[in-house]
Image (cartoon, rainbow, N blue to C red):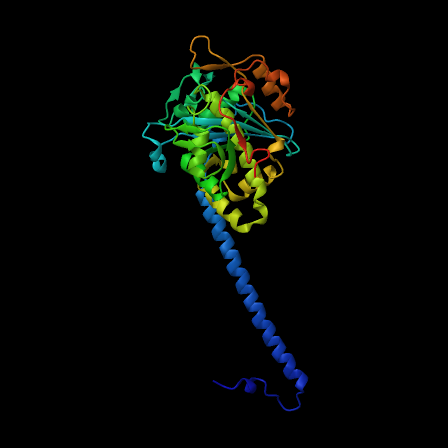
Length: 374
């Protein structure tokens, strides 16, 4: 190889300044090429991650499935999202049993106000008797309208589209988005967040949901958190209402955990959560991309536990079947009207409901460490 000094040899009449200029230009070219290569690799990695995450998300075209016969969208900038927890035992969920089909094990309507600084979360008990509208089945046939049908059976009859259609029929509110998560997906997201801290004043045990917690403060991993939000027999009278109360407590604790870890300032945690979330969710097609999910997360990031109004659809026990509940009137209409107007839910919409927290006996569970604890 020729000596580097030969490259710097000066032609007759050239000055030392010319040599220094040539060397400087060569270094600049090398630096420019190195920088360009680094930027290219970074961009390629970013595209690869984007494609990976986008490929993780299962998207459903709810709009095409339901057509134009839906409530009008609210004119303000609020958002209404139907969030379902599926009890499907398919795939990795088989460890939870071998029941056929799938139902909406948990159903919440999340209403985010126009300012995006507060949210109302309305749980719908799965045993609520409603009039299910006609829905298309997976085999192409149509299930006719059915009165006095359990709310969670809509999902079993016609999947997410029927669940959305039934929810919109019940509420008169157009759902902007649909999000579904199954058992294993829920576990994965909680584990990725590092667990969620709750305190229970009594022992909680339920072999059916695999819950086994002694009284005290616990950081629940994914499996324990799933057992808590699924239990019906560890608290109260074993009904779905007591379980919903526990779920509301858990959602507040989850909001505290998300706020405490500085998610948007932690690239590693954000990456892991994005991977866990996108591989665990089924959404409407409009939400089924990294950019849309990230945008939704940013919409929610300023809503902490103190900005969450957690309520249950006002219900009464059905006079013909004590194991079922029915929407309470006029409280239910007042609730849905408040959400349609993007207003706080009035106390009159909560009065007299069998779902009121003060009527739900059972073990006390609170987010985090009890007052005076360490």
